Image (cartoon, rainbow, N blue to C red; front, side):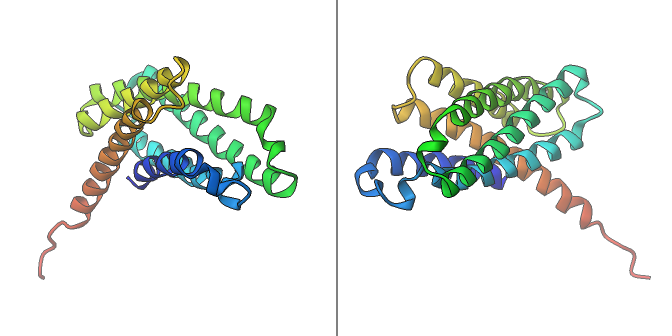
Length: 195
C-alpha cells in the first residue's frame, strides 16, 4: 500500500524537480541524480515487500507461470533497489556525473523490463486466482507494461502519457496492499469467549 503511494509520489517529485523546477534545482542537492534515487530506493523496497505479501497470500493458486512472473517482479524491484543504492553511493562519494554512465544505462532499463513483464504475468495470475481484488490485479498488471511502452515510443519527456500509467500502477499496488492489510485486520479481530 505504502509502496504504491510512494511510487506515485516519486514520479511526481521527479517531474517537479527535473521539469518545472529544473533551473532552481540545478547546482543543489535536489538537482543531483542521487537525490531522486533516495526516493525510489525506498519505493522499490516497499514494492518488493508488497509483492512478497501478495505472493504469499496466493502462492498455492497462481501456478508456475504466475510464480515466474513474481520472480521477475522480485528481480526487477531488487535490481532497482541495488542499482539505486549504488547510484546514491557513487553520486555522493564520487560525483553526480559518475552515476550517469553505464550504471544508470544498464540498471534502469533491465529493472524496468523485469518488473514490467513480471507485473503483467504476475498480475494476470493474481487476477485469475481471484483471492485478492481483481481490479487491483488488473491495474498492477497493465500499469508497468504501459509505462514501459510509453518510454519505448519516446513519451518519456511528456507529463500526461507518463502520469497515467504511473497512477494506474500506484493504484493497483495500493489496492492490493489495502486488501492484504484489511484481511489481516479481520482475522486478528475474531471474537473470543468471555470465559
